[in-house]
Image (cartoon, rainbow, N blue to C red; front, top):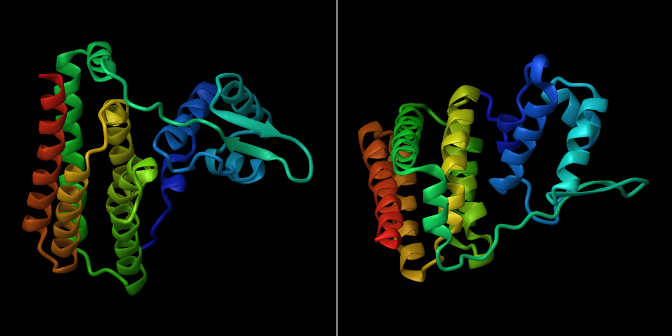
Length: 241
C-alpha cells in the first residue's frame, strides 16, 4: 500500500479546461491547511507542474496570482522559489459569527456532516488494514507532533494528524475528500481561540483514535473520531451561542 504525503494528495492533476483556476485552488488548499507551513518553500516548479499535470507557464501564472493576493513570495535566482507568507489571523471577537454568516447555517451543518462522514470512514477503513511498520511510525509521529505543538502551530499539526489517517488508507480520493472537508471548516476553527483544556482533551481523543486503529478495531476507531468531531462541533456552537 503506497502512502502519499498531504501535498501529493492535494496536488493531484487538474482538468485542462480550467487549469489555471484549479491550480490556484489546489495551491490555496495546501497553503490554508498548513500543509506547507508559513515561511516554507513550495516544491520546485518542475515537480509541481508534473504533479498537477499542467505546463510551467500555467503554474507560474497561478503562483503570480497567489503572490499578488499575499499568499506567496516568489523569488527568482539560485536561492529562489515560492515561499509561503500566509498566516491565519489571530481570532478576534465576532470573527466566528462573520464566518458562519458567510457560509449560512445550512452550509455549516452540511460541512460538519460531510467531515463526520469522511473522517469516520477513513479511520474505520484504516483500522481494518494491516499497517506496515513505516505506516505505524508515521501515524505515531503525527500524533506526537500535534500533542507537542505550541499554540502557534497547533492548528496546522492538528490538520496534518487528521489528514494522515486518510492518506494512510492509500486512497487518493479519500485523502482529497478529507482535505476538502477540513478546508470547509478551517476558517471557523481559526476564528476560535486555542484553549489549553481543549488541547488536552483533544490529545486524549487523538490517542484513543490511534489506539483503536493500531488495535485493528474499526468500530471503536469510527466511534473515537465521531466523539472527537462532536466535541469540535460543540465548541463551535458554544462560541456562537
